Length: 112
Image (tube, rainbow, N blue to C red; front, side):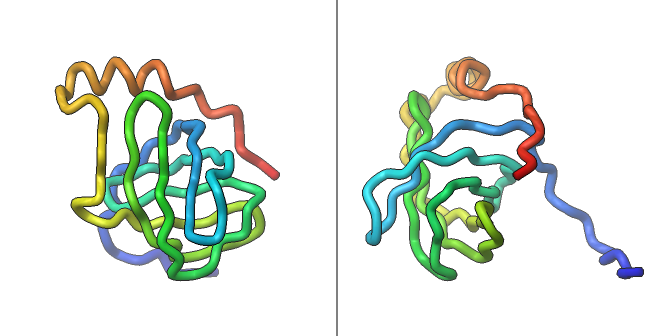
């Protein structure tokens, strides 16, 4: 049995959001992002990312943020956000919450 690490984990969203992911190797590809925290997210896409690759995560009606790919397993990849790279369209937190509410769907169970 694996021993659990004794550290606090960041709070993560259990929702998913439709997104587009762009990299130097590809035009925008469709993806779903989930497990969103302040430092990163999980990307689900049929595109295979390279470890360390820089990507742009674009969320319709919200904006975009750059990230580095930290792991890849099948259709899933882990992305670590690049601090200061965000370009959000709605800076007002209340308006942002309304936009996020429109873009987020209840998780349908993202099993392969």
